[in-house]
Length: 315
Image (tube, rainbow, N blue to C red):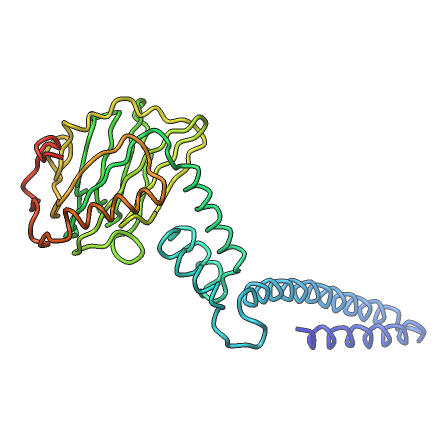
């Protein structure tokens, strides 16, 4: 582009000189006017080429800034240990935010480390703010057998049909979803994919679904084996009403339809959100005293036909 600008500029100057010569030669005034018009046209084209070249350079500088955020210019060195640790953390703990960064940067190594630090700091702050909040946490030790279907597949559904409802299901497009319907019937979903980076299938896992109510905000979180997979912080207090947990349905929805395929080993509900360390201690105690010696084929099998009321499970 710079060469084109130089050529157009030189041609413009040359044509202008020719026009000047013609203007002083008798009977060549009309020709001189046309030559000056050509020179002006060349100058305009050269100006717009310069503007385009300037824009391209600005885009390249921004691209180089992102590229060099983790990798020094001209280097093929992989991300630093800190950066790689943040990338690995973000894949598991903040997948949706990591996905947006990756789409912008195109490659993992080009994601600015400041952005990775920011999303981790935000996640830690959300976690700290949610500790010991009133609300509830629903724990489920399960093994999910995902079968793709053109309908929702409900694991748990509590409450009433149109409001004050808490549902856990796999959507038609294979997204694992927890959804709280408040006292007004408004839905508040939290979602993660089935598989890598989300909720594993075909293996025994501990699922946690947390709803914390603070003075000025509400937090909803989904956990796998004690680690937060996805969370939503609402800047207002959600009225959850009265969730009728004991008469909820396991293995289908409230209408005893849309069943799912999974093994259930342990289900329980707590009245407040546990701090991180207490959550880990609870899961460790649960696994060592109850689940460690269970065969994966034990527990209650929901095979796409069976469903139960929650209070019939004993806990």
